[in-house]
Amino acid sequence: MLAEQISIFLENKEGRLAEVTAILSDAGVNIRALSLADTTDFGILRMIVSDNVKAEAALKKEGFTVGKTKIVAVEVTDEPGGLNQVLDPLCANDINVEYMYAFANPKCQNAIMIFRFDDSDRALEILKEKNIKVIAGEEVYNL
Image (cartoon, rainbow, N blue to C red; front, top):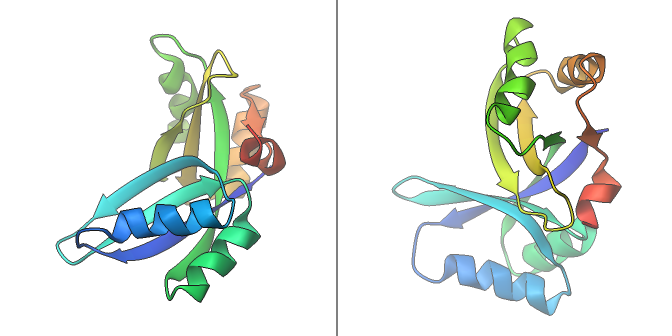
């Protein structure tokens, strides 16, 4: 039930993000979700895209460094405490959230959150035990 995101390392300078989005557009790759974290000199752009293979090839062809990371996409009830219902059992079992970001999806009445855990396999077990819906990679890429 793990999905995959791509991570692009960007110089923190004007126009680099637009360059990435133009490359993906030209390759016919749709961005499904993204998160951008920066430091003074560089940023890490994490993305869920419609086609990782095409995205990686197009970006590498243009000289970008691209990595792949396994993540977990979780459906979160869109109500007060919805995210807490996911985080509480993970915390109780010492699972660390390394980072997370939201996935906008007008087709779903609930929110979708993308998580990177320190122990994804154990996190998946806990989420299954608690009947928390995890969304498979192929479904996430095509939402």
